Length: 247
Image: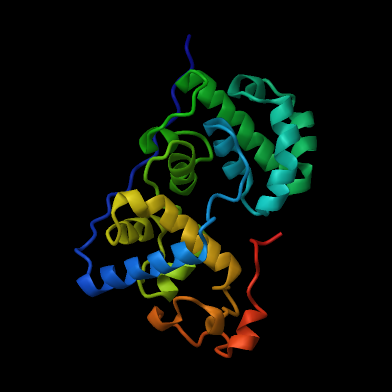
């Protein structure tokens, strides 16, 4: 008897009012400036195909991209496909994921995820959001990362940095990630969504820190209603700027 398909997760229906024209213009101008500030902005997780993109995104929870990038080559050398990973010995995978923390939960997630890919999608990562969110351990954030970075399809990644920055910049007051995604999506054309996510995440990691943003060294300071949340002196603020994401 064939296995039962994964249970379909309910999809939130979000109604978004038409955004204010001035807000749209300001938001898009900020994004243009951030694009010039971070011309190399991209996903900071390493991967070479949709399966690797999905896996590294799932195991990046509660750890750093650098640690994931250090651990993933050995993981994919041992288990390069969903079929191989679905048959992986739990003990070996836990050993490979050990440096990331929460390795038992992450091992469980990858085993269930790869099994679902094999059983429900023929060993291929689906390229539709509705299909991706059916996979165990995959929410909209992970699905949008995969869509935007592995399939070049528009997707907004509402991670901690993204949500914090869009509220700090006054683009939305929403805190629910799905509502944030829809509210910001209404400000930008879909073709901009993926790179917008990278620009804001890079800015959040390098300048617009949660506790002490580098306001005096911020390229969009004059457009930000939260200017002054951190040091405004250029010399003091510049000391807070980092050249890369967190280790």
